[in-house]
Amino acid sequence: MTLTELRYIVAVARERHFGRAAQSCFVSQPTLSIAIKKLEDELGVTLFERGGQEVAVTEIGERIIEQSQRVLEEADAVKRLAGEHQNELAGPLKLGVIFTISPYLLPKLIPALRILAPDMPLILEENYTSRLAEMLKRGEVDAIIVADPFKETGIEAWPLYDEPFVVATPKGHPWEKQQAIQPCQLSEESVLLLSPGNCFRDQVLQACSELSSRPAQGHNLASTLQGSSLNTIRHMVASGMGVTVMPATSVGPGDESLLSIVPFSQPAPQRRVLLVTRKQFFRKKAIETLQQAVFCSGLSDVVMLEGEAKLA
Image 1 (tube, rainbow, N blue to C red):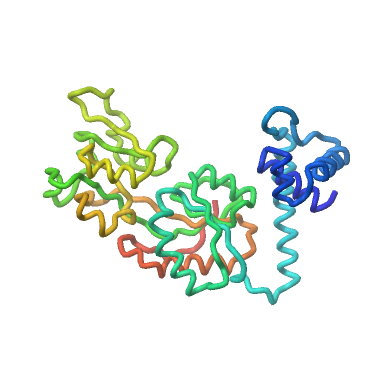
Image 2: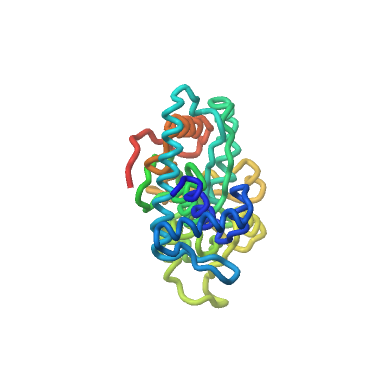
């Protein structure tokens, strides 16, 4: 059993395809296939179910690949320990960010990070929380920025900031004259939400429970509409389709000409944004610097947090 063979099976599990896995490992497909068959013979188990358009991982294969990922990470850590002089802030950092945070945090985060760690560029992945969790577990990203709650084992998480939710309405809407909105008032309006599968949608429904229990749509009933992104929803609201709930960081100066932004009454619904890594991730200085860059990014609309890492 070699580290190379372990890298091959991790690549096949990630790509679900022998050809693409071989390309990602910079070897020919026969070379990769022979090495994996040799490993299966040595272990006496079948790791992959061949056939069809996509390779499936067997039950025992899932467990072995998960352990192999840990072995590869530990091997990388050994190399780092052997070169203690190496700068943890040199070299790319693979960072995943959820869709409802990425467009609003990154334009502020990256300039701050360029000052603090000019030799640590970001390789970015924007995706849903569930997909980013898988990528973190498999070592495809080094860290992810997601919203709480985030329930996974083997991770270390730091709170970055809390941000309140606000209500966005079209210009001229009666609510723009109110000082604050009660969550229950949303049941009176057509509310635009993100499509199912997005964690921000779930957070809004949890904070405004009346929306999830409203009756079927009808001409005399407020309806719940869906959009594919916060930016799409923003423009639908501006056109008069209804109102929506947005995280505070997504509200920019350009929205003033399109929308009216009204706060919720206190205590306002909010979400906590987390920075998450695997427990065994060795570039601790890189993570600390990323935290510092978030703190220095000028997110004036949110409450910055200072606290110890919490283990999940």
